[in-house]
Image (cartoon, rainbow, N blue to C red; front, side):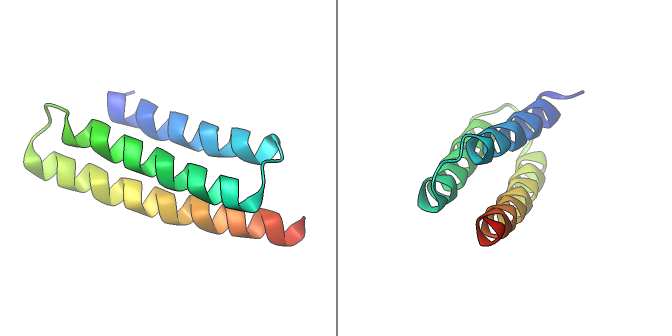
Length: 78
C-alpha cells in the first residue's frame, strides 16, 4: 500500500468517525472540507511528480464529493 493509499484510507476513516460520533451536519461538512484541504496540502508538498500530484488531487476531489454526498444521505435519514 502506498503513502497515498494510506492518506485516502485515513481520510475516509476520519469522515466515518465524524458520522459515528453524531457530529452535526454543518460540522461534518466543514470537517470534510478541512480534511480535503489538509490532504491536498500534503500532496502539494510531496516529492511526487507534477503529473502524479495532479492525478492525486483529482482523486481527492472525487473523494470529497463522494463523502459530501454520504454526509448528506446520512443526515437525511437521521
